[in-house]
Length: 457
Image (cartoon, rainbow, N blue to C red):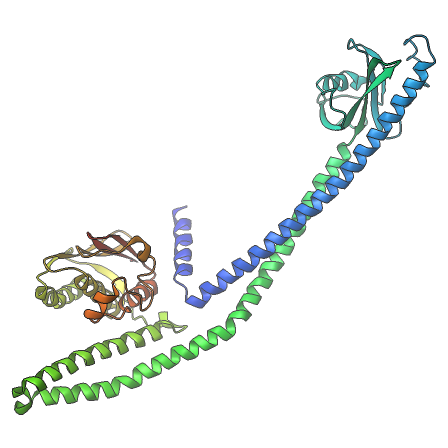
């Protein structure tokens, strides 16, 4: 059972980490299938409701007309008599072809006359009729419950009969002479209606399967031109980023060469200009590298670029921690590092180190002077856990769901001042997804944030 749950969890994780177009494909398929299912359900409900309404209306009209005819026959017969003791004459009222019973109940509740197809069922019919509202003139559907075994009945297997019954008052010389009850057996109708629903639902399932297949095909065809345009754009960004790296390297080398000239460095204005050029070149180079990384991540076979191996991540974490500690010292930020003697993980060492650098750099950027940043690493039986916690400005709840979007920055003014361009966390998310892991954020405005990464081992 545990293995099966782990398989389902891994499948859901892979589905959630699928590329953008795959997710869009499944969402469109779900949307089209949902619309098709809605219309199919409406059709079934309308068809079943129309069938039920037409059939029951016809049955109610028939029994109402039959009750009026029999009541008129009884009243005409009694008007010619001097008393009410003539109901033993079977020629007064005869059961019609589809009539189950008729009874005449006197004002005091006595049975004055009656007949039914199965005489043994009279007590059960009268028991049900005694609970009917005699003030209601419209036909009602009642259930007659029979014993489990009643030999001699054509339908001995049926324990519950559905009966359509109607009550009609008898008025003789202006006086209430009794109540006429008439019933029709409609059990077969409800059986047919039940099977009709089963057939409609079965057909709906078949049509739904076809509709889902059609939705899958239509959504895939609809995404083809968009995916081709996106692929061309991705390739352009990758090519442009790659081509720009060479001239940027040349310009950066030229700036470094100028910085070695004594005449240039003696000029304060030239020195400040070179420092500004150096910083901007570093910023542009980092932007090009990030764009190239994301362009490669968007490739259809991006996961193949991972060079996974089993190694101890602690030395890599220590080097990265020491590197960012120099940046933290400039802001007087206290750094904390917690990790076991060995942190064994199966991953791409370069990508995992890049992930750690992004998270630490992001924490230092958004932590004010005098704050704290804590890096924690631990290994669990089936997970490698990496946590970066800071005491920074925090993330508003409405922004947490978008911090991994490209070029999205919570504090745009602060990010511009610090040289951020909103791609770091997008790259971090891609690295985690490529490893089949998860990354979660817990944050409170003004108190700090924690990025928690879990990778399967």
